[in-house]
Image (cartoon, helix red, strand yellow):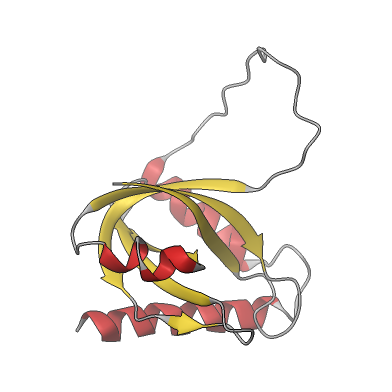
Length: 148
């Protein structure tokens, strides 16, 4: 059952990413997603305050994901032989959703491969958005730190 759910989520994300490849950078469906979020959560004002330090000169796209492990996928390999594993997390906030995190390299076989279902975990990830091809616009969260 979980495999079916996991694969269904991947198919939906791939279909959305395929559609995103044929449109402008801001897909009109994003407006619908924002509308849905606002109805469920309400307005989320951004708190702007003084920085203790200057804005760093180095660009970065990072995400923090906290949730319960729903599925630990089998070990896969990239075309150059690098191992990877996809971890599906479930979250209830800001609303119920599934998040996919990619463990890349040796940690995919060891650390990520031994996560227990239902265990709460905290990933710090690099955010990589596919730029070309059928999956353009698809966000990949590549794990770089894991706390259990």
